Image (spheres, rainbow, N blue to C red):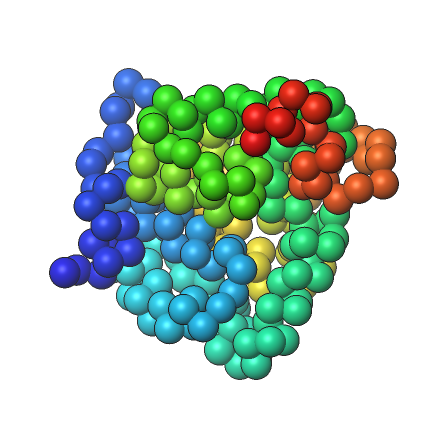
Length: 230
């Protein structure tokens, strides 16, 4: 079994429908997105074991390797890595891995956006286990890599401003994860913006409104009907 098959499995090995997206390198994009999904997930021993496979798979398809993050993961005790991950992604609003937070903030409109994600997944027979909201970036990336390259591409492209704002926040705070988000952005057309103002212009409006004192991915932010269907 090749490195690509180990990373992607049998799914995600087809080509994209050229009528639905403009990805000229579907295999490279699929590997990059799946590798990013793994690297942006909660770090555990299995992740550390997979690092050589992730590196070789990215190199095999000519995708950028996030060296800073790989070195950082190898150099630190796992419990420290896990604590930092929780601090930066679970407890900090600055680095939310939930795409709709960046565009809809803590608003009722966000519930409608999350429902749209669920509808896309359901159209492909993908069922969520409720552990994460449907806009959780590693989940979206795995969907794009393994389930539907076309619809996954469209979700990522629709939320490109969210990806860029996350990338810039991680970069500005000197966190090694910024290279992984840059890897994801490299699978989408166009050049990434250099600063936050440019990313906000890409989004078409200002920053999200933090209207309540809850984490942006807290299910209590959703409308009652959406919570009950989660």
